[in-house]
Length: 148
Image 1 (cartoon, rainbow, N blue to C red):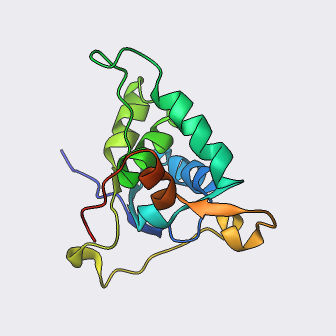
Image 2: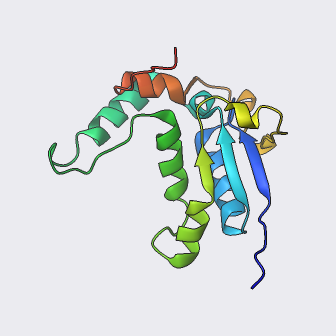
Image 3: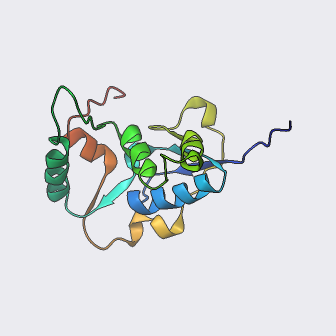
């Protein structure tokens, strides 16, 4: 039985809008590519920070504290779960696609020399209103950045 090697795509999330980037990544995963997202803490949300943080706090309070559901506060896990919401992860096709996704904060040493792509449609430079990074949101909702 011959195994086919899937193509690996490295995505630089720096300055990309979270929702648009994740939808593009989900399409690539469903097409059989392996996707590695780097610099996840530098991805961007559009809108006012105060309102998004308030929405996040309300979302985090849902459920029983002992039993869950538990919500991630780390930027890499937050981004990975966002992509999970865009693939049919309960079906075999979606499970296999989700397994091909890796998300990292910063750029690990083994991926330093890889060529990274960005999506022109997801650039935050096109935003006219206020915006903030996923790392800033994560700090507001309780993430302890131990990398610094």
